[in-house]
Image (cartoon, rainbow, N blue to C red; front, side):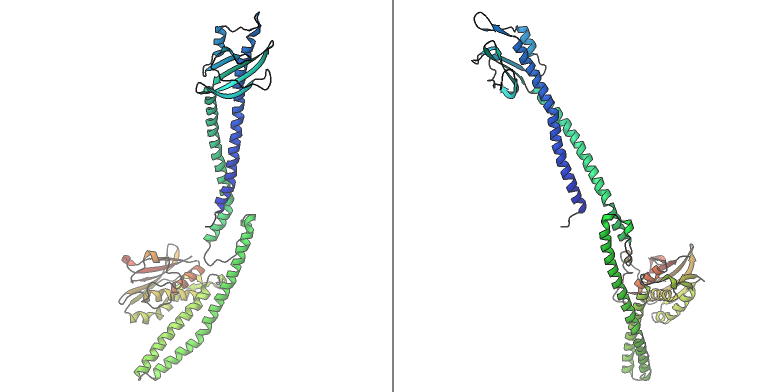
Length: 453
């Protein structure tokens, strides 16, 4: 499966960015939660220090005096969100004041250095501050703990706020990367559009000035290929023209000899019939050879505008029509024309070939007792040459195909499929436009060639 440049660029840009964004989100979460956790721990530590301040020296019996009235203890335990637990224990671990079910305290590393850690009490997670201190000669352990409700709520708010923020940032990053990749690929898309817009026979080099620096090696490779194709096309056209030209003379001689042979043996029916068949085949070969020669001359890449001159189009049409009178008569076709005096700029030899091909094509595809009308008029500011027939017509799906070389609508009609390809090339050489439409009352076909005025 061919890889997409766009997908590869997006993959190599978005995936690392998302990974970095994920790491950044984790660090941001830690930076936001860590100070909050420290502040909460400091509040618990202050409660532990407040308990320490309530401890006095030993009395006459050697016991530590605890100055913590119920009201003061109630003040210490005040918390609107969590449950607060306290305990004060002697060196033997005996609870002196506070919650007797307070879990065992983890000893801090040194005296008067509070230790914060997580624990559990009464089936609920708690945060514990453990403080060890000296009161006289006695080592006292102070524990203060609170449930994690407030911390959990604050942590959830930080997490979801950060999640929304990171989601928004991720969408922006993806959008920026997508836009950047799209913008970056525009030169490649423009180059593709320019090449797609070219005519099939346009083999001129692609301009390097119009492409990005990174695409110039590609342009150089394309231009090299176009140059090779152009040389091959030129050699092929020259070979085609030379072969067609070389065949014309011997074929014309063969036709003359066959006509003489038929005339000489006119009384010998078998010989005359055989001669007529050979003459018909020779005429077909001559026509195909002439069409190959015209095709080589009309090739847009071979055509030179300097050969254009003012041509009386109506006279060319009139001369051509005369050559098809006999052909139309054999099929009992009504061949008529309407000609107005019109001049166009063109090559009279190519224009005659175009006219001949359109008329010949119309007569071939029109059934017996049909009609073919040739016209030359000035219409809507343009000079229009039209050939209308009363044949079977051409399906819309085939109208774009009939101008391709060797494409034929029916195998029942003699031909080689080059006639309309020649018409297309000659029209293009003269900056003319071919319009194909249905004939009168939707029957048959009308070929119209619009020449610039």
